[in-house]
Image (cartoon, rainbow, N blue to C red; front, side, top):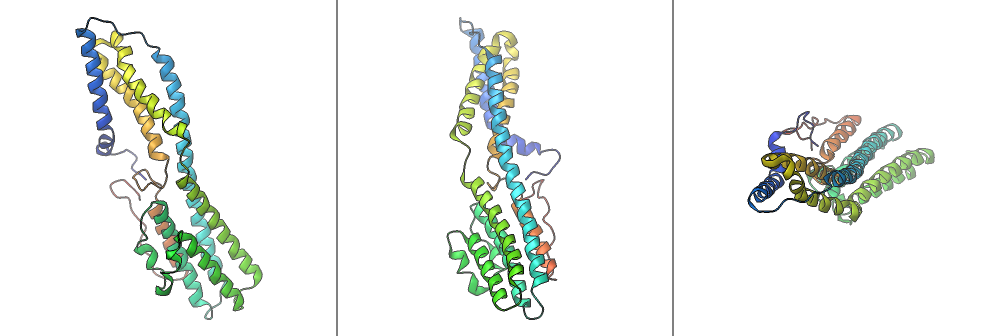
Length: 294
């Protein structure tokens, strides 16, 4: 996630220079053809086309941003649920009998959120997951098709062990299970966002219409703007291409790009809060790297 108040000009240039160059060359070609070839450009209803396209792109961008914001909201719920699980574990399990199980549940939750982060970004399970698990557990939950869900299931089994040992009663077990349900619901929402793309009409039609509009734009403007057509048409076309790109950047909040929801930073926040809840030393919060918080 880009956190700089002013985006990097270098990053912006890297993203737009190719379409901008192609658009400028096309605008120049149309302008030269207008003055060289013996025909006049047809009148095009660019106002109607541009208005319709702007509405279409606006709906698409709003839909993409809603997906991005829902992903951030679900991770906010995950942070709160992780804190609630750690607090309940710390308060319900007695010392010294349940101390080891208490620490194991808390550390497994840290491993769980990092495993979920890797799944959503389509990355292999990394050290941020395995270092919080005991050696005997690494080949069990992580071997499942959904490693994060495997870790969550095993946390539920450990809560049941605490109940059978008499360390917690059924009411306390129910309260902790309710937190696990909240965690599972948040994970399900994230997987829905990741695995369900925008409808095909929202993905392809705006792209086609925007590029067609940029092709016709200099033809409709050259008679009015004359030699200034390459500049005016390129700037106007860039606005539409920029809105199209915004939708592409936000539609997947877990795409592991600079526009991503900052999953790594939020996993680090959970790690800090949970380790401190059991009295362990915690790392420092993540800082932005070149204006990007991962």
